[in-house]
Length: 176
Length: 455
Image (tube, rainbow over the protein chains, first blue to last red):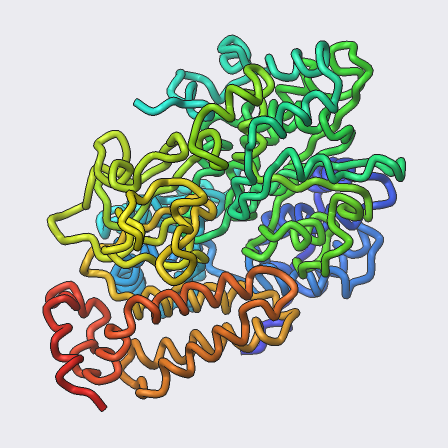
């Protein structure tokens, strides 16, 4: 599916702009571009966790850099999403120690429970399962990232509970 | 009980907060350095301590500091590498999450030593909640007068900020980290010039790992000589080890360098032995990049000496029979683990994380992943082992940064020590169909089949 044509409503609120300006202030006045990575995170968090071309252009405008300078960064780093994603993205770590502790079986379980394949959002757009590389929680495996937080020592029962909590709106995605 | 330098206060209730941290003696090193020592005296203490870079390379920190260009008169920067992403490693996160002010204190004392007035902590994007912890801790420190203009009336100014990454292992390489901090793709730079001469915004820059910087307050409060008295030989001080895999106690431990691998593995104070009654099969002692060790080379070196948790002992025997301390990412495998699958897993990681700048790494890591995948899935050919060897040899040493070597070494070590397991996969595809093939029937039990059926 060609997703780049999906329209995204752009809304740079005053609160978001205040945070962006604060981030820009962390660098010398002539080094605004340095704020690009943190600014993209903030902007993405405020726009349903993805960055359309139009939104990337807006970031370029704010930081006074060329759009290509934003595109090349967005395409390099895995945490920037270039298409709409499931609201609750279950990002399972699938590197060595997590595998030793059964993450592959757990991913199969989660996918069948949600009725999806890895990388495909559920029809209601609420969930998506993704396999990612080492998240730095090898001693607490198996685990996944959900929004800004880690869910560790996972079991099938914990997955069931998380799915229920997400559906009931009990899960906070971003720490603002 | 081993001595604790970094984790001494980790269990004090509320140590995350400025008030408790300060009440427990926190920020004393800043007071001592700024009021009683010159920057060069701080550098000298760190040199004397023998503290080595804790991110994996093990380069002496004091020496790295002494390379910083002071003559050009350009602004200098200290950048803390908190982009912890080496599979098996989760120690820096532990420090930052539970005792964030220790890192901030270390950053202030170290920045003073280097004459840096603008410093950064670059943290990996996935540690988003830790980024917030650090941001709040920095605000607390600033409100208490430890950051800003004229700190403690000393005339020394420092601003400290956290910068968040966005999911790229390569940004743990110091020049890629600097690129990323400049708002660019994480493509490593060609050295020289080294960051000490031309780093962040072409200014002289020192990049140090979280654990390295966190050790500085203790060294300043006590002395470099006291620190050097801990450990063994050129492996001075303590080291955080992130222990994971098939052991009883998984987590972060602080050890005196020089502790025996046997004690670390089996003492209840540390790993507590194996997770189940399944036997020890292999060990990755220092993060995914370092060579894997087979059971017979874990507790003893090839020369029959006790293997110790030190830079020297873990690398004893070179790559033929040794490994490396690396970042201290200690992954233990019992006989349920499949070495071919684990090697494929690591190769997939490196393929995914290669920045794509150098052809040997960009193409080679993809080849390694593909060939390992087909062996693991019963489609391997006899000549594939030779092919893997040839690919890894063509990557090693032929790239701008060490990611290429890091991708090559685990493959070479797996073939060196576990070649028969690769042969088994190639010759008995039916037996490895299930991805958990060694759970019911460990390789040790079927090993004899390989010798009988040669091609």
